[in-house]
Image 1 (cartoon, helix red, strand yellow):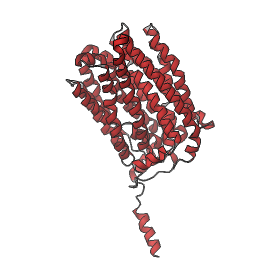
Image 2 (cartoon, helix red, strand yellow):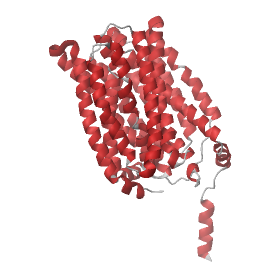
Image 3 (cartoon, helix red, strand yellow):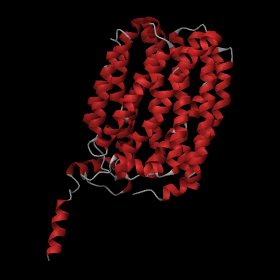
Length: 449
């Protein structure tokens, strides 16, 4: 009898699924609403990258006004941003696995938008670094809760496609950031451009808060759970991920690919402006249209293909990004060595699309390796490693090597530095994709619920 009473009290103490969860569940039964939420989250992610790309496309006039070196620019676009981005990403993701993800995204969006506007007010390098640190802190609250929401909205066999649609925001941001930033700066200057681009994000944050409902956890798997206080710790999630060889190799493969993507992408505007006779607005239009549209095609195609190929063999989750990474190498070298700028810009659409394929497979694989209450934190851990190595080291290493080669190679120093980064990243990444595929099926079979 005493045993039964104890059991009853214990069961009563377990929180039931709330009324808000039931209401949200009803909303997410509508495919139209799910795709609306996904579209809004993709736009938020796009604004995230608009704010980043502004600094990339405007770094030459910023360099001239603040008298910066390539190493300083590499720190500004890479390590100074990413170190706080990844450090803050862990506690924010921890909060997202426990609390209201929609609200976290709205607050984060407001923060990075305001800090982007403040970037335009920087009077020296130190102030510029501090502003970019603020942007990094804000943007740390964007992707992990969004990834977690998307995995609760879409079933596992549709997850890579949904995450790829979300990731298309990267290339929407590149497209808009380059074109708007390049042309606005021509007429109002780079400082006012940061102000004009930054502040509208606050209005989008209000839209997120007012129109998006928090999806019930486990909704996509028909096993909704309440917001129970018992949560896996950071070390528990890290242990689950790191105990799987596929995840370890996946991390290093994606990090190496990030070195290629950020190491080249952050420096290509400077490469073209230094080596060809082209205006900033014209270059921005080319880079925005070619890079943005090609990236969207690549990321969506990657999610679509891997959702279908992995039905036959799950190892395609790693094989596909490995193959496309290898294919990007010859195109990248032609882009950097042709003397016709327009041919170079058009051809750059091929490596851009190929490098974008990995996003959906990598994110979906990571989420499939963990339980539903670990997804935001698993995304943060993945991004911590990818961004520290890819975004942190890539642009900085290219800038440092360019400065070192400048006395000997002159204007060719940046082109050579970019090519060195591409070779290292592609070879390193392909090796790890192959290694990840070797244990992927076994690791997925042992994944927690």
